[in-house]
Length: 154
Image 1: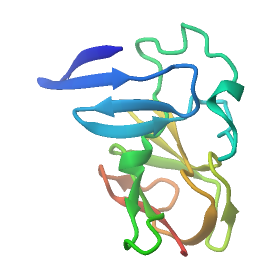
Image 2: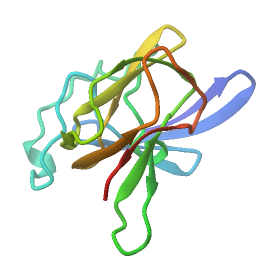
Image 3: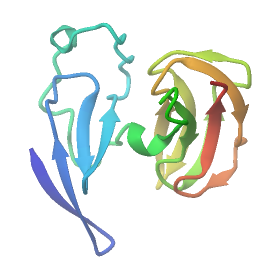
């Protein structure tokens, strides 16, 4: 499905792939994101897309908060590992909760923090498993788009 969305005089071309797959793949102006619908845990890496629970047709509705785009939420490490190391703010807002601390082991889809933007709570979820090296934000802190939120150790 393709959409043209206008926000504050800015036009965005949005393409949404299979709504029944997990994660849902969304492309915004050529940039690809993985979207995990809120309230659903990330599927294990070995799970086949056919095993994902069906998604109601009403899940993508105007005004519904969008889960964190993975492509903007992480920065790639050196080419040797290719793993995401830094989780970045996908949009400007205020950190209203942190659920991890340095040294914490996280799994794919686990909530790392919640970012409030325009009175909407946006859970920031792990796009990969790993160990948290550093948390760069505190509760109540205002962040800008693409500010580092936390960093993985490897």
